[in-house]
Length: 441
Ligand code: XUL
Ligand code: CO
Image 1 (cartoon, helix red, strand yellow):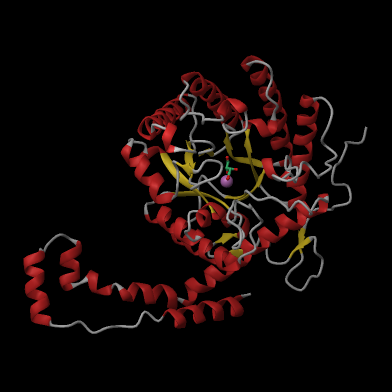
Image 2: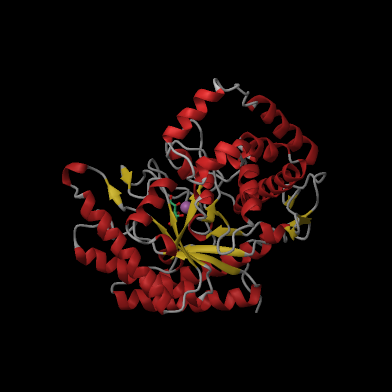
């Protein structure tokens, strides 16, 4: 019997080079091309986000589902099985190596925890077999602790410990699934862990509850042999007014406060950064500077819109900034570049899913090429290094190594007099960046 296919009209997406005008081909993403000592495929650990790409409906606050997916409909478990088959067909045709999921994306919730766990285990077995036959791997798993009505007031931060217990049960099984599928990451995105109004909220209590859940999760993960990394994904607002994982700096402070820092890295998402009124690059840098940049949800927002639009990434400057940081830190060992992005409501054809991912992959391939060219060009790195050279010798070195004090520095300043002012040369550096982009692509 011929196996059902869901993307019959689409052939395997291939690299055809920059001169190709085939919209269903890569122009820059050439998995075998070597850049900075590794293949593009090794640098760019792209992942397909199951929730958007397979489960997205195109619904928005003003209207319901508009996509008609051939894997939808019928009995919930049968639908889940068809969806998983479609996922692996899509991922394989696209030539991506990884995927990411929430527990409730892949399997429906039953009438009891036992029923739910049974369905999840069935689907995990199916996914394991598909991973084996296609070579596609799991990047990370997570639990959806925000959609069910019981989580209206939060999951771990809920005032009711019974809700906390339901969340714990879900995290346990989502982690089992992640380990069974060989995932190298397990993500905590805050979901509804935040407050809508302070008038009914004990924020101190809620943050402590959240930390307790994370400690339990780490303990459980290690007990079942999870060898990967735990990731926290900051987001400042939406769905709550204030999310406790507001941004990278807030999360680093939280992890330190509750003795969790050793166990977690950060999963930075572009559109979450901009919602926090930071640039994507800022959030990546804050995490990388702390040695904590573990994974990235690549997408983009809309500059004119104040919510999480989760669009596919097309911004070359962002991709260049990302890849410069990744080249500097030697890549992402446990994480990758997950397309936490959705096609627009009006892009309802199956083909649109391919265009969206192809564009994102080519954007980051271009970013990698340019980042490598900037490294070789050296001018940007050298400029910044030179700007702080004073702190590597003389009085600057004494400041950095704790070998001086306010009194000695006053004497030094009085002796030396007014410092010479040196231009920051921002415009010159921006021109160099644009020149290298134009020259290297
Ligand atoms: C929500 C978001 C999530 C997480 C996983 O804004 O980014 O999809 O990535 O729960
Ligand atoms: Co995300």
